[in-house]
Length: 390
Image 1: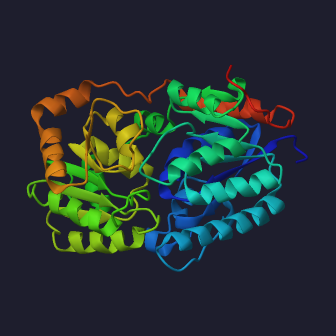
Image 2: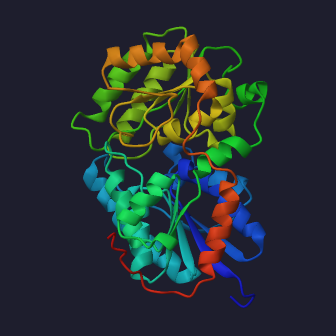
Image 3: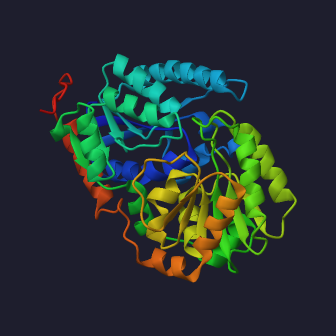
């Protein structure tokens, strides 16, 4: 670029990762040293998941490139085809935009495809949220693979930083920034309960209220639909509990889950609201109105403890993550989920959750990320070297 700025491509494939990336992208854009280009792909561009590319534009960003995918089917093979389409589309986008580096968050299959394209095209990758463990999902392997393709690493805890170094990454290229989702939880201007109720068409001013998110556990031997049926049956054992349910992601088996959730909500309109995408502001506003979170999303582990409410973490999907004492782990059985919900609603657990520390919290996470990214992009390009632990 003739103005001397470095160009950074920020990649986003879901409502969840954009909610985490948006404050970082904004801080970098406002710094004056980095030109930020947003590339949207996968679920953002799918109408059945709410056309969440609109959330990117609502945050004040133009989308520099769109990489659509159109694989039929809801199985593992269709996910592999989405990866192939993503890799090809990202190659075209990178070739046109000519970035100096690429910013990737997390562990999803489309991000592994994007990282592969960037690596082949000699584009340095900055990776957020490496070193974490989620034994119940294929994302675990995807995350570590992205780590090995990346040149610079921003981790959510010191333990995760050490794990990235254990994977052979140079210690001075791995920085513990804290989790950006926790920073969002502490710094996002929130809607009032009345404003939120009007926005989603559901009264959140009277409880008890739970936020529910359930994704396929892609390393589970039991079909996701069967798991979700047990999960919903357990929720029905608490008829006084109002539920705001968010849509699952498009991992293999996810499409069938969305249909089942739609049927569940339609039959219980007085106490269940299904929202395909809340977006960051509505999500964090909802947490401040809720009594607990139920499901298997990473947000229940990482962000929810900072809202001062318990999490019921169901099944194996998040197994291995560091967790606050406000997180209650349970298996997929109806009785286990039922008991965990009752424990989370107890006065003792409600008080404990308000006092617990969040292991993912670190002051000034967004500022640290912005500064570290700027510093890294000012370095000359150099080939990666493997760091041996002696």
